[in-house]
Image 1 (cartoon, rainbow, N blue to C red):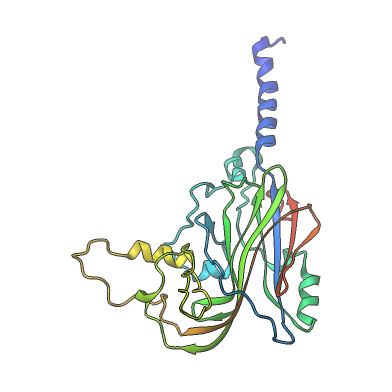
Image 2: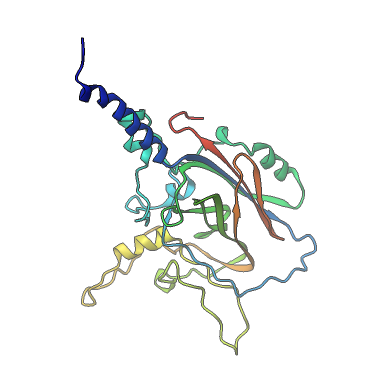
Length: 295
């Protein structure tokens, strides 16, 4: 039986179309980070206090992370450039995968478990954060910053705070904007209406006639996002006298010391990379991941 020539071309054209679609789909990666502090054994280092601390506008949190569990249910990531669903989900009818990006992985998926164990046993080191997730490789305009927090909690803040992200342009790059705070004794509770109103505003600069102090820790963006949604814009309407239970009603802790790490490094797949700092370090491992494989 002979088929018309146009019908014979349909399967071939569909094959080329699917192949092209797969080739254009951004690759998947597993990202794993291990952040640790290095103790100043002699307590004689003097750190700069003119730090500029801020959170990016293009942010999100990892699903299933401690931050995700703490944030209000109404908060959504402020990430208009990157789609909430990934290409693999859009291809479900073609590839059958339903991989979700930006989900915090359990430690059974960790590849830096040995490094974690060694650092915890080594004197002078403290593991602040060990986290892994999977995502597609996106360009600088699309790739979101992942908000992270680790170490001990002091009121509404953690010893380690900041954001990280993976960027794919011609090459893979990992970017980190982190700060590590050493807190002191608790002080008086700070009312919610006296806290900073902008999550990404720069820390205030002291005047020339005053002693320089540590910068104010920026409001976590998911907290600020929730505050903005609940603020009354009508000046004739009374303002709420009782802030939400999660807001800044926990003890405020004095800041004894603070260091920041703002670095970017080019990555090699499957190789351990290190962001160096005199007082803290970041181990990064990025490997290719086959979406839907669970491996």
